[in-house]
Image (cartoon, rainbow, N blue to C red):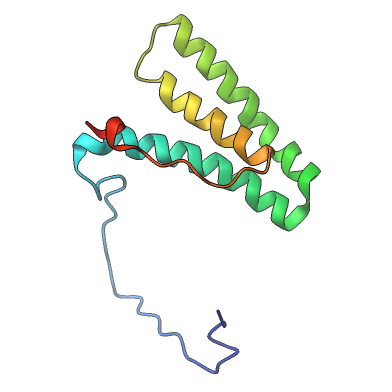
Length: 116
């Protein structure tokens, strides 16, 4: 993929365009849990991947450690408080980090059984 400058193309900017972003509303509300699980998993996987790609593995490990420990703490807290809604989200964060640390591909996908 070439950048627009390298192929001598112009970029147009229109300052007068206004829009409202309705975050997390691009899907049917019945899929909100699956969308949140996917977002939590991929956000943490991608964070580690980005830092590893641009700054090296050990720098990425240093940057992701606060998220790693936070996700463990949140999972334990959710289990102790029997917060069955929060636990899967915390687990998705944790698993995204672990998969990325172990150089596994970005593979989380909600399954049909998760949706029904």
